[in-house]
Amino acid sequence: MKPPYHDCAEVRQAVIDACLEMNALGINQGTSGNVSVRAGDHMVITPSGVPYEKLAPEDLVLIPLDGSPEPEGQLKPSTEWPFHQAILRSKPGVNAVVHAHPVYCSALAMNRQVIPACHYMVAAFGGSDVPVADYALFGSQKLSDNVTGALQDRSACLMANHGAVTTGESLPRALWRMVELETLAKGYTASLTIGQPHILTDDEMAEAIAAFADYGLKDSR
Image (cartoon, rainbow, N blue to C red; front, side, top):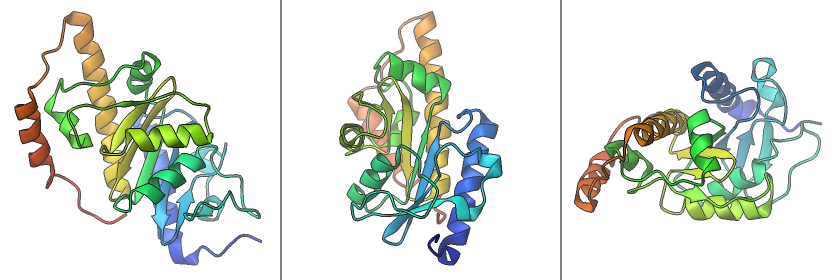
């Protein structure tokens, strides 16, 4: 029997809408990405391998945040559910996690190339660069450890030879960050083809980081 979901039906629909928007924006392809949202002491996450346009709210998977394994009696959750769970457990201020394989983010991740302070928008992710989490097999505990480590003081990271992950106080915020991260990755990649990008100073980045503290979306998940 599937668990009750009437208490988070809006959250479930918001997750489906976010997945559809990711594909419409071209920052994800097929079902390679996944989205989760905090729902009390659980998380709601996309199932594995189901086309987003075919998802119904009851298809999303409810998983405890207390470290429990994937539940029975539901669709199989995304293979990446362990790092979603780990992020939400380790970062109480985060309410949503978005993972995708955007082309430019993935290209930099294949090179294991950190995005430096080449643009002030790097500050949108909490620091003076966007780090790269070390490679590990998808769905593994090692990958969860690597991703949570890279996100310790950041709201986004690249994932070596894989893709990218962003977090947010709300689902719109996490999705916004994924769009901005791919835009940044595209610009940085282009800059490398025409020369060497100029890197902003620590003082310039500190100023930008402070300015981003009160920037943008403040809505709920």
